[in-house]
Length: 344
Image (cartoon, rainbow, N blue to C red; front, side, top):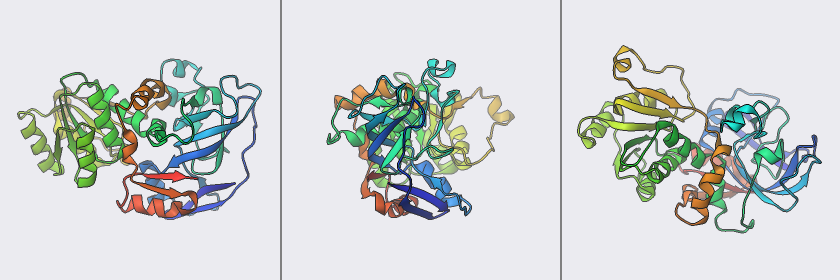
């Protein structure tokens, strides 16, 4: 089969690899019908050292079950299912607490002999725990929306949930990428009254307004912080959702948050420095967030897609075939595309 491999920064190729097979009784094999490029894929795209052992790419996908192992009982060939961006058994102590991102037997796609999602097929470890069946056909127009359950919608939901966004809240969302826009959706679903989207790409922030942002702040740094404070009566936002991962974004989050407020950090951190000195310590700020346990929220969020109340698939603004994936990476890296959809 064909799959996406990354050999070095900027060097993404589609090559022939062995077609996946059942290895363990709890495995399934799916034929991938839809996947995408994630913003977090761009970090290795910018920095991966050259290697002779290329990395299998992709962690967001929808597939049709083709084979199941003897220990799989909740799925059958022909089922259409979405895969969260981490696989998990969904039965260990952490999974039972809704923390599938810490599953004792789980892991990442594309490493340690596990297939990536940017290919034609994939072996699914712990298939009963990992995959969630979809009540639509593979030709459904809702598939792009349902694909966001793999990662970005659940990550935005995690940002809003861990921040404790509640009805009437003032929320600032830092970042106008797909996760930031999904965080706007999540904040609105939880009843936030004021949602300030901090981003400077007008096409993206216009979409953010459609999703529920009440104001847009294009300024960055101290100018951006001052604008947020102007919009919140001088106090700052009670909840700040940091969806970028760069040091400048977390600094901006601390500046924009109200005393006694909460920052939820879901952007993959690209720096170990967090500006939590004595001055911020005195302000009683809560810092939370982390990797989203997407599997925990897929079934909660799916009905809102099925009934049309949210359309998160609008974050996909370009569709390509698998063989053109290098161009998809380039377009996202160069900010020519927000999020690229892949139809293998």
